[in-house]
Length: 98
Image 1 (cartoon, rainbow, N blue to C red):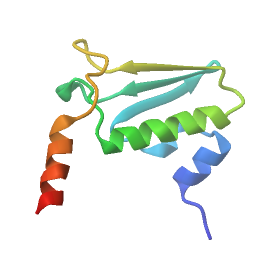
Image 2 (spheres, helix red, strand yellow):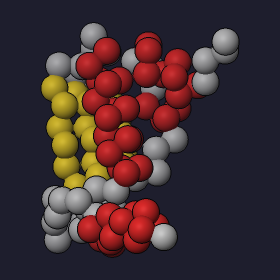
Image 3 (cartoon, helix red, strand yellow):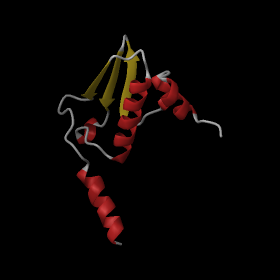
């Protein structure tokens, strides 16, 4: 079975631009991987997609022998991260009860 570009990138530790992340900004330079949560409009809270993208970025960095350090930060000047996206959780709970 053919691998997707994203799967190939995760397995080989190649350019982070190939991931096409929506909720995080991921870069690698000079032995440092930087992961920035990019949801400043909701104070960088985690939704399911953010968690998936974070997991993929951490996996890629762990498989890349050129990475010695991972820095996690948040976009914006109000908050690094406020935790879980409770609105998403409420929507999910509401759909389960229907």
